[in-house]
Amino acid sequence: MSKNKEIKPDQKTTIKKPSPASAASAMPGDFIVKRPLLWLALAAILVYIVSLSFGYTELDDSIFIRDFQAYN
Image (tube, rainbow, N blue to C red; front, side):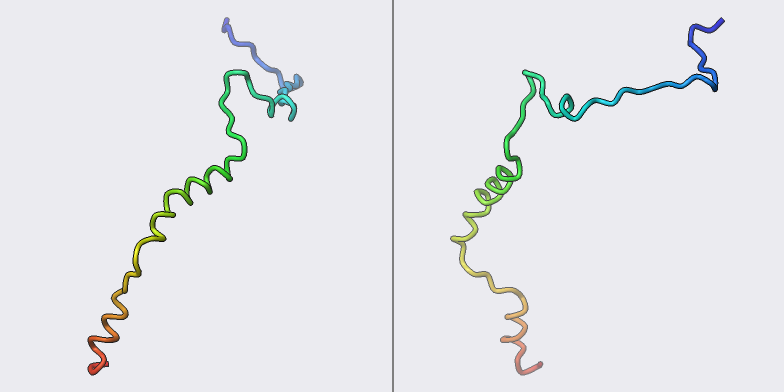
């Protein structure tokens, strides 16, 4: 005999789904960040704010236009 229970076709099994209230509630030890998109945007701004003080960089297009003007 097998130890596993066999399910007959006429038997129905039900799976309990967690309610929205219990799914949204957190355990006391869980770490939850409030307003994660705001923190992500703030982190991106802080990282890239330094680049605003850098000078303008000319791309290759301007070199090709000025230096090869006679050729073009």
